Image (cartoon, rainbow, N blue to C red):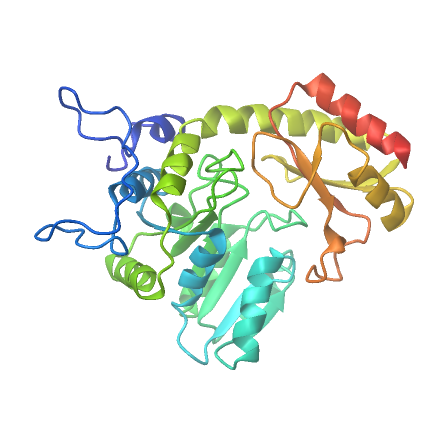
Length: 355
């Protein structure tokens, strides 16, 4: 389904990427577990395409207003986006970014392929200055895990005047909140493992662009590097996408209520929330040891690193060696799920009491 201004994102998550409507057609695109296809058509071989991937790509492309390429994971999608930078190019990135992205960039820099300019994205002038002579400006908004919000349109305009490609990781906000291509970005990246799929049962990534030539480069990267999703994972991601709007609404409502309760709790210091979305951060008083006790004392909230599922999860982010040192030692990143709020808060409050 092509993107239509008449359809809201809440409708597109349900309607886009469906099979042709004809008698006895399936309502959803089925799983196609094929490694090869009969010659003479567009597919030919399992590394080149799959109808189950195409359904997810059509839906996400409609949501983001571009053409989507699905990959085997969020990191595969990030790697594909980074491949758009020629050898020797400079990449501007928020100093507070997903540590997998920072690790990917650091590895490429160690190999001499690119140079990295880490910036404080809360300083627009510094960000614009760093974009001078850069090949790519990579944005997260909100950032992970600091939850800093970036004015995408402003950054995109500044980067464009300097000839830099703008990539936006839209994993946290989702296209329900913002469509970066419409704000001037060139490339949108998602870890579809997270909110898009939403059930913690499939690894997937996706990149969306509006430019046909860039789409060709990204599709070729998938073929040549073998970063292909499985048909089962593509099916699960598409099925999860259908409930994105209702999941997001419930989880966001829980998050907003939790923010109010956390702000009023005597055992909590700083609370972070950008005003939208399903991710909350907070710092228990008592430092890293207290944060560790909180994150490992819950009965309902799952202590794990992932996010964006129907279940609430949390962790102390500085337990990871790759997390920037500017992230507070006691910071807990919580991905809020769709549980009943009273049950969720009772569990959080009990965990805070353990500290």
